[in-house]
Image 1 (cartoon, rainbow, N blue to C red):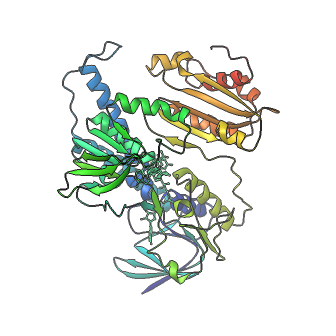
Image 2: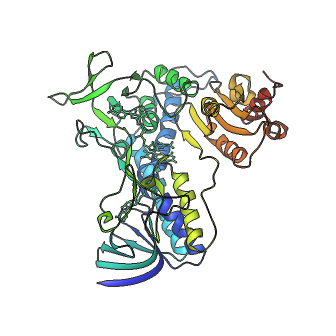
Image 3: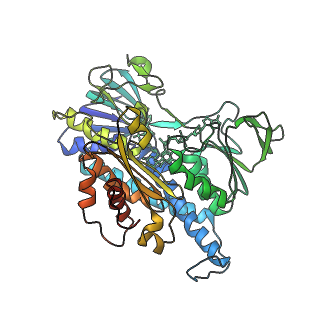
Length: 465
Ligand code: FAD
Ligand code: NAD
């Protein structure tokens, strides 16, 4: 049995853990990070990156199919487009491989020691890791739990065989002819749209009466329209019962009691993710919980001194950039800096077609406190760049206080609007007012002009609408 001691031990190399460890190393802290799978966690290996790679490949393929069908308004022709999904996956694996190697390299560059194996707490200061070469005991002054999340499994649809999670969907080597998806949230819609473009007959079963319940219907309506144009069927207010006796079809029941039998080659279950709170010795500790999640304060401290928690294991929103921001903050706190979670907003993006971005409050959320608000809405139909990109669907919407014009929230739906999230986040974080955005020169021709125009419209003087 080997023993080491360090100032900071991080469990998990997802976006939360690896960012925390890199920053700690930069700050000169003697840091160790433990990972039982590949560096990069869910995000790099089986989440954000591989899903966006598949979405991009699906877009390209779908564009080629439209060209071959003579449906390209620009006059571009293609013949007999085909996709070799095994090759697509190999390309995607090449990207994730480069990124995970990059994470290992950055950790080493920052002087962080990487230990490979499953970490388990012995007590509040000691962790044992089962490594390939035996047990490694690590004593640490401070420990960060960054164990992330895993897909929720439905008792009636256990993973295995036809029934797959996002991880399974992101490693398919053949496009399923008929794909049934349970859950019309982030993953169900991002991957559902991608597979519909790749040629699957997609049916999505959602328990609630709307898709993407996190976003308002004005934002989700263009996505619903696109799903329909892609031939995807969405069954709202419908509950799944399980697979048929022969395993040929997914059984579901609509809100008015109608039985549905959805013939499927694959059933993708995307009904949320659960925090990984087991398997690392939580029973040896006295950690307060916040529902299913580890309870943390505004410095990511748990209820035990010297133990911090970051990322998906600490709650919603389960997003990579939240985990990274928490990780960076915790490393600075451990190094003695005074830091607090003081973010005004965490941007959220759904990489559907069209994409949805939301930063800060929606109009309804802003009004909920009885506050008077101004809302400016600018459609991409009036934006030259959007026209040249053949993507006129969607809009930018700015929400501000009526009294002093402080921007409270910014949302957009449209092709490629994910890249506008940086400007939106900066505006909210810096406390911009409508006049600040309206007075900023936005380069022409770009979709970002819609941001300035939406702000001008809230002030009553948009120029191009
Ligand atoms: P994780 O990334 O889950 O990493 C936790 C790590 O801890 C894992 O590597 C695990 O092996 C390790 N670990 C757990 N227990 C132990 C142990 N006992 N010992 C050693 N190691 C351990 N978010 C976005 O912001 N944008 C997106 O576009 C996006 N797309 C997504 C697409 C999909 C299909 C999925 C599934 C998720 C997506 N997410 C996205 C969510 C994002 O992946 C997570 O929010 C993010 O990975 C959370 O980071 P984390 O560091 O908390 O945990
Ligand atoms: P989700 O919470 O986004 O959506 C789950 C959906 O499943 C909801 O609409 C819910 O009403 C529905 N549902 C739940 N139980 C059901 C049932 N029994 N039958 C039918 N429908 C049911 O969850 P997800 O799509 O699995 O994604 C998990 C998390 O991963 C997200 O919440 C998000 O934090 C993260 N993620 C983020 C991105 C991104 O940032 N672009 C992309 C993918 C995943």
